[in-house]
Length: 221
Image 1: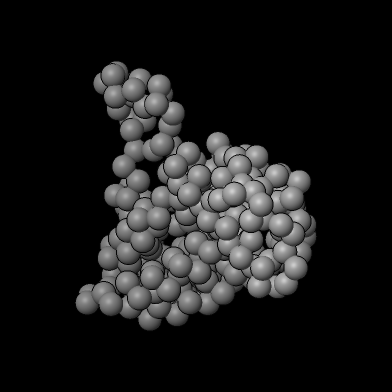
Image 2: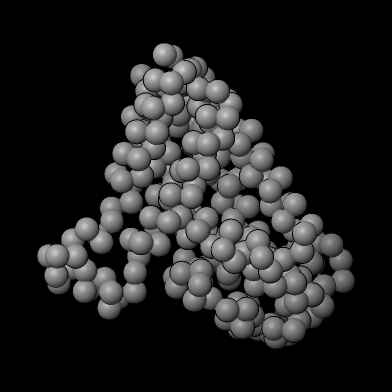
């Protein structure tokens, strides 16, 4: 997009359009390269803006990606709740599988989930962190009723723990499963390193199912 199109926004609508363009560019670059590889300069160049001009809309690179993480929560939570609510015979295995399937279908969201506590929340204002945490709270408000309806033995805290475990593990396993090209080639070339090759969805599903079976057994003992 030509730089001249990005004169300073003079209205709320113009500002929103600028922000959307920046978020779109960051989303595309993050999906292509991985979040860690995308700089503020990369995003500015992708939208035809000077980096200093882009700082009128977002204070930092991390604020841009934190906004995309919030967007990911708003997309994921209702999809997961619908998937769990549609289970014909919900149990620990099928609920865990729903978590694993909906998360691994969103690889960039998994990448963002890993980066959020490490980087994204550490270089933004306290108010931006507050906004983000309110979004995740809204997501819990959508997910927890569906999970507890499917598995009535679970407490609300059990549901919170399940979501925390699922999102944390999805982020971590995604990072393990997507090493750099040279490291990936190394893993494939040496049978002794087969344990380093991770298939995220089945592993995440197994771990969450084990957690759920344990909690259900505790609650029904």
